[in-house]
Image 1 (cartoon, rainbow, N blue to C red):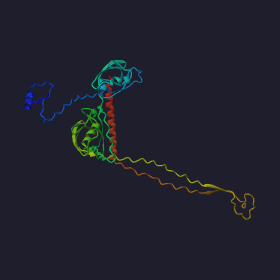
Image 2 (image 1 turned 90 degrees about the vertical axis):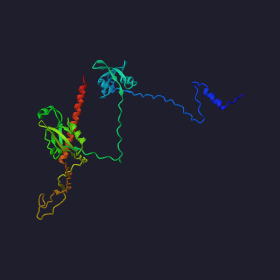
Image 3 (image 1 turned 180 degrees about the horizontal axis):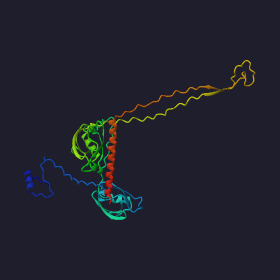
Length: 362
C-alpha cells in the first residue's frame, strides 16, 4: 500500500538523513546536469633510437667482428675515440661477428644509452664506453623554383682590386710582422680602389672595419659582407709599420658569358691545275707539195702525241675569320684573382683536414 508523504516532510527527511560516501547530492529539478569527467591517459613517451655514427664492413674479417671504415666527425663514436680500422668484437658483453650483429645489438637502444664496446685496435683489445646520441636531422634540399617564378638578380660583388696570398714564417721575418697572419698583397688590378689609395705590393692586410683578417679567404668574406659601394677601413702593415686607411669598394665586373664553341670544317685547299693529255693518233696533217711520201718526210702524216687542254680549277673559298673577342684588362685580372683566391681556399681546407687527421692519430 502506498503512503503519500507531504512535500515539507520529505524535504526535512532529506536534510536530517545521513549521506553515504557513494550517495550523490540532490539537485533542484531545473539545475543543469554536470558533464562527466573524462580521464586523460598520460602521454606516451616517443622512442628515439640511438645513433653511433660509424660505418662498418665485415667482408675481410671472416666473421670475427665489424671493421670500422669511417667515423662521422662530431658523432658519439667520434667523441668516444673510435677510429677507422677499429674492429668491434662486442657490445655490452654480446659477441659481435658481423655488421648485422652490431646493428641488431644497437637497434633496441635509445638515445642517451651508455654502451660498452669491445674494440681491437692494432691487435690490442680495448674497452670503450659510448653514449649514444640521436640521429641528426636530414635537411631536405629546397625545391627548384618554377620557370615562371621571379628570381632576383644576384647582388654585385665588391671589388678591392688586390690579389693576396697567406703569410708564412719567412714573410713574417722578411716584412717585420708581429705574427704570420693576414693577407699579403702580391698584385693589384689597374684602376681599382686598391691602386687609388696606393696599397703597395707586399702590404699585409690584417683587419677590415676592426675585424681580424688572418687569411685571404677571411679578407674575401669580410669584403663580401660589406658589399659593393661600401666604405671600409683597412688596417695593413707596410715595412713593419701599421697603417690605416678608408676606401670605397668598387663593383666587380660581371663574368662575360662564354660563347659557344663553333667547330669549323677544315679549309679545302684546291689542288693546282694539271693539264690533261689528250691523244689524237688519227689527226692527219695536209699534204705538203714536193714531198716524197717517205716516213719522216713533209707529206707523211705525223702523229699528234698530246694536246695540252687546261682544266679550269674551282674558285678558292674566301677564308672566314671569326671576330676577335676583346676582353677588358680589368675583367681578365679579376677573373685570375678569383681563380687564385679559390685555389687558396681549397689549399687552406686541405691543410685544415690534414691537421685534423694528425690530431686524431695516437
